[in-house]
Image (cartoon, rainbow, N blue to C red; front, side, top):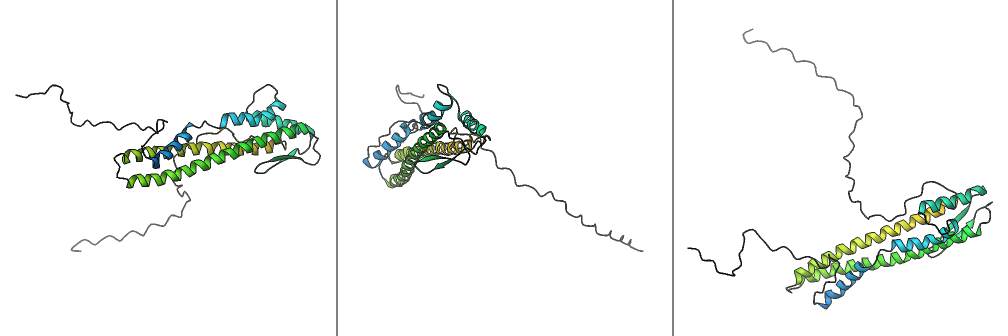
Amino acid sequence: MMIVLAGAPLLVAGCERPPAKSVVASGQLYESGSARFDLIFQRIHAVQSQSAPAAEERRASRKPLLSLLAPGGAADDRTIFAAVARRIVPSGAAGFRLDVTADNAKCVALPGTKNDNALARASEESARLELAARKRLRARIKDIEDLEREIDHAVLDAKRSPAEKAPEIRRELAQGAASAKRHAAGLKSAESAGDDYLENLANALTGNRAKPKPTNPGPATPANPTPTPPPATDTTSKPVEPLPPPRPPMPHAGL
């Protein structure tokens, strides 16, 4: 006779407790109870809480040109560049050269260009705002890269720690490293888009109406990366070697 005690837990073979959900992966502040690690987790949470920089700063840097070329309207970057180029082309001159330094931008009229102070001032202001945004992006990228190095050191300390929570701390640090890496990649994508904006604007100021580079920050890595194609095979024709002469027939036994 089998006796089952009331209230006794039933264990099913093959069933294990699912792993605990990561606090950091869900975007929340993880508290380890150790001052050594909690400071890093606070910095990780601060990075996760930062808003994406692209939208507001993109609007701010385009506003000077939009106010001049499309008052009260909205336009994407390609429309802005085309409007700048159209304003240059009728003069039949070479337009402006946009000189850009780390912190400043200056439009220099090329020989024969009609004096268009309004366009020059709007372009300079737009470029300066983009440069200021790029400077802030680079500062944030550096902070995250410093944080990634600190996380690496913290993981090593957690591996050496005999504390009962050490495995959980390592797991949360790993999630923090992955989150920091994603945020840094997004900021670098926005920085690259800003560089393309300045290059496209410089081209438009010379009247160049070629298709500009896309300036919308995209994902750091493609969702479906293109597989690496197999190495090309050599299809060059090679001379065909002549076949060897046929062997003479073997004599029959007894002949």
